[in-house]
Length: 532
Image 1 (tube, helix red, strand yellow):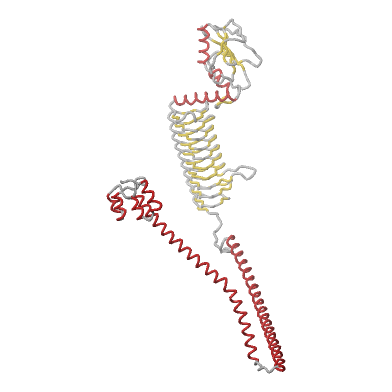
Image 2 (image 1 turned 45 degrees about the vertical axis):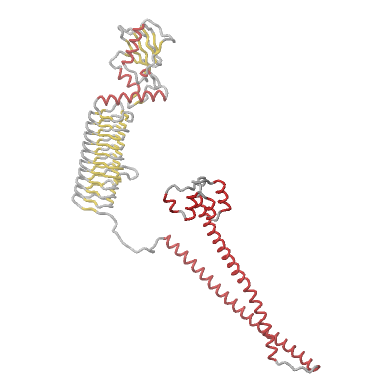
């Protein structure tokens, strides 16, 4: 007989949540049909249970991976090898009539692992997750990537459902056949057949048959009926969407009831909170709510009502009516036609222009004053010069009169003295002009000398180019050491007459003389070149 009885001891981590359940729940659910006893705190096992039990097992309730098969394997090993005592992690198994000893055999199996630290919790979590996912795959649930899917043990998934990567389903969720969940997180939700949830977050919500949610939608306590559509960036909180209702994008629905086949435009907001209390909003069937509409709760909109875009509803709307509540559009001229930045720049430019014009006016006035002063000074200087000349002429006349008194000299007229003074003045002007012209003449002379030097350099460059060209020809057709022999008849034809003759005769020195390079090439060719 290999029957065994199990004692379960409580621990600090037996109430730790792992994939939707407590660690102790996994253990008790596994061994609910086997004889066991849960010991109270500080109570020790007695091993005197009535019955034909040959082995007694003592385990802790935080061994979430513990299974019946693992215990049976350990007991069978003890029976086959006649082992009276064996350790299983923090627990142990002992044969009837034997004592518990600190030493003995031990079992190296993850099934007997306790949740004692974070590393052990990670091992227990991943092992349980893998077991749960494989159990659903065995039940014909389509799971594309078992490594990126997290499903709690409390979740119910029907066959033919599709769970795509990066999905987490937790709590008491139920996924019906044909539903598709992609990269979303669902907690305590029910997804009906053929419904689709894509990249969304749902809690305590219901999604009806053939309804679509997402991408990037959030549902909190929402009820989405059949064939309804919740688009991207839509939040539905404690609200109901009727069959075929459409909320495409960028909408908040809070504490509301939306009728069947009603369309809510982009940017529609149900204003349900007044700062103290939440209020309810009701929208009838077959309604059209335009974009950017605000519904101030509490309010009701009747069936088949049409609310224009941009309307803010503060009162209830009857059925079969058209409602518009936006401000009338008015068109007015701007106080200025251009942007403020452009105006500022133009003002700055105008201020600069005014400053520059003021500076120009002041500069012109200053120049005028300077010109008037210079003219006056010139007139004064000219007058002084004339006075000096007159005085000089008078002194000269007096001197000649005195000489005439002493000597008999023919006196000169006043005109002759004026001519002498003007000649002296002209000589001074010509000297000053020559002093001004001399640097210019020197400048033009320097330019001419540079042009002459450039011309000489150009002629020297031409001669050097001609010499180098002749040198290359002599090297091409001269000798083997200078890579000079012709390789084809066409090259022979391109030679000049002198080079061709020297090439055929093998006299390279004469060819080099023809190239005017006898001193450099000819001497070298005479000593080193050979016949081709």
